[in-house]
Length: 314
Image (cartoon, rainbow, N blue to C red; front, side, top):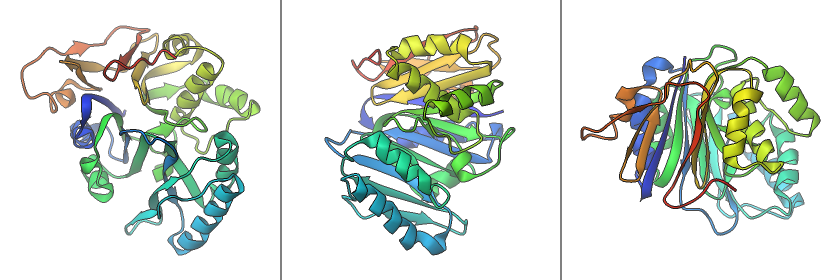
């Protein structure tokens, strides 16, 4: 049992604060870990990286090795890494980098360092922040409530099929594609079959979490020429299991529900803004006035919520 959420604003605003409220209201669904994907005004060039390292004694050495890998691909830090650390064994970081000559090739080489240091997100707009603990705890540590953006995702996790580790938390980045994130409530029963097929095609998975599969699967379908809407529709019959997932890009949020409709999704849309979550009481935390709640309770549903007039069809 997990809780998921999505939030869309008409213009850049306190989306971090709203996502924390949405996830705090669903903490009873899982407080092993909590995560957020926030989309802010995109950079004109370069990328924002969020990630974590697994030995605080190796911070300097790991970052130097990481930087050397960047330089091998014609890129470098454009800002000093900001380190976030507490009593946990791991540390988190945020940095900005210039454009590698080939993003996917660089990600592949950077992932070879994942035993020591691991990228959690890469995007001109996207930042993924995730850690062990509940929404308020993670927000206070990483200042999520202060983040400004147009839209984002949230997830509260109760681990059932994989370990309670900070890097196994949601949201997941669709490596190696920039600016794509996913949150998921459910269980993918053909995870190993699907993962092995994608691995043979060159994709890399860094956890045993079945949710990581969805982000890469949808992005791979789009790489093959499908629109986001077509990929979401195809996922319903191509991925086995019970699931409701949301997938975000800089242009908006898409969603899909399985053929059995076992995982809930409720939505409030008002004057171009939107909140979606697993539970009604969560979406009402960000819409104080009385308003209608749409219950997406049927099977095989999918759709796209765009930000402003942007389209996610391409």
